[in-house]
Image 1 (cartoon, helix red, strand yellow):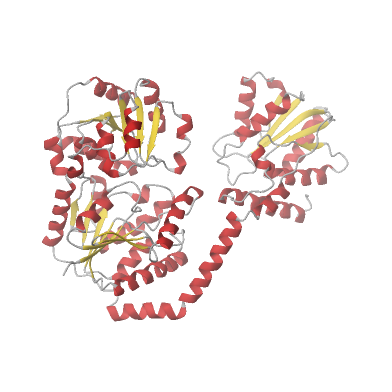
Image 2 (cartoon, rainbow, N blue to C red):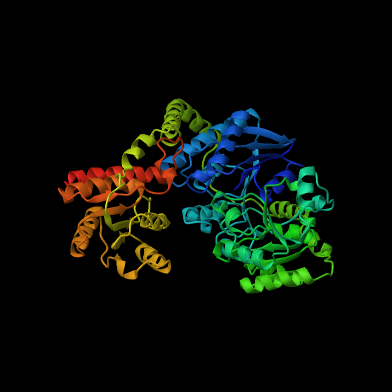
Amino acid sequence: MKKNIIIFSAIDWDTQWQWQQELAIFLSQKYNVLFIENTGVRKLKVKDTKRVYLRIKNIIKNIFGFRKIKNNLYILSPFFLPFPYSKLITKINFYLIFNKLQKWIIFNKFKIHSVFTFSATPVVVKIIKNLNPDQINFLYTDLMSESSSEAFSLKKYEREIIKYSDNVFYSSSILKRKVINLNKNHFFFPGGVNLKKFSKVTCYNKKLKLQLDQLNKPIIGFLGQVKNVIDIKLVKKISIKFKDCTILMVGPVDQDMRHLTKILSNNVVFLGSQDHKNIPYILSKFRVAIIPYIKNSFTDAINPAKLNEYIASNISVVSTNLKEVLNYNKINDNIILTSNNHFSFINNINRALKNKKKNNFKKIIRKYDWKQIFKNLTIQIKLHNLRNRDKIKNDNQLDKKINFFNKFFYYSLRRFLFASSVIIFIIFFSGLPSFFSNYLKYFDKIENKTIDGFLVMTGHGSQNYYNENYLERLEEIKFYSKTYNPKKILILGRWSYKQEDKVIKGLLISEGYNEKNIDISRTYFANTKENILFSKNFFDTNLIDSNILVITDPYHSKRTKLISDKLLKNKNNFLIAKGINKKKYQRFKFVYSISELKVIVYEHLSIIYNKIRSWA
């Protein structure tokens, strides 16, 4: 009888092809495999909309999220709430996933022999412990806890799963140091390549073949997800230096990196996600392959699987001097051109382009065949006896827990999820926030008005101080200066990492504005009321009695109007300017981001607070 294996993945099945899919395919040749897709390591963001849509589509399309890929290989696309570190949400997610999983296991008589997990999220650790399999194997291929500030909470759970596992497979020397004192059964698990795929260089997509054939310049290529580990400044320098080459980026572009398509040179081509069977053909077009990563604690712990795909294609490789790339070089005749800085990286590309000698890396790449790596992995597991681990629950106790949940929580949870879905739809997708946002946007009619001073307030109308809204204020000053010639421009605001008032002043001076007419305050004011009072005294002192044009964010305009009218009483000569960003004055829109909603809520609460204090 075939053994049954569950793989907890850190990615979805249909994303960029990586270690997880290769392991699942290999194991499914001999065993029954259930591949459970990513359960999330950070809070939901607007950029995740497409991924969430695909996940929900898979859940609806398939039998409650289960689908069959091939014989012996099944995929579960679990539904979960996107708050991975909340204790309450972790409990809810556990029941959502575990209950569904347990029923599928019972129905299919899927007695679990082994679990392989690439993930160490709170809910995954909890599920694995409650499944109580015969064997647990942790594949530690990324230092995920250092991938972002949000993911730092994973540190605790990474340590927990390392201690609890029967075997731990690490992919880099840095990860080994994290493991060595926590688990004696640890093994090196390097990145690999499917040499069978790379033995045939064929393009199975006519449109793709035509697109690549039209790139008649030498190709400097990158294979992998375009995300925040990419050194953007370096890629920009490469595109400028090698104008006679095409910089080809092959892989999905993370939402945070979409702006690259606009700021990079025309010779940078984004090919997007590609079927993995076409990768050997795409790589055959590369003259030089690059790994232009930022060097930090996260990337130093990465063992790039793409490196072996480059080598399998006999391409010269230029990389940042990542720790694992340097280790790879030590045991493989220094075949990678590693770079300490941008200058060195560009020089190495130049060397690689000029090198006309054809590479032959066949001897080196053989030991990195996934088939061989996975064979070694299964042998290492069989050679070691299972660690005596305290069993958390026997099967009867587990069945009782499921029944208890079904009786007391199932229908309440359904009602909770339905209500949550309705609330989320109303808040984010119904357009209802438009009624609240429209109240906040105010501007005066200033045609035929005499205006002698500008009051500019920056840092408002954003969810936090780390924003670039001050650039909008700058453009508005320039726009209104064409009609009005202010005697004085006073710039006030709040700032954290960048003194926006000084930046605006400097930019105005650089464009020919008279420095004597531009003032900023040396004092930081805690609220809009103090800004208004200070500016009134300032303009009075400078003998400016006519109207003052107030330039601020549209979301901050109503509060400014209410406070200035209340404080200045009969001298209501503070006129609110209309912003030049027309999108911000849309009367109605369906979809609102979390950051916009935060601002709307904050501004309404601020107005209430100011009314309570009789400031507005």
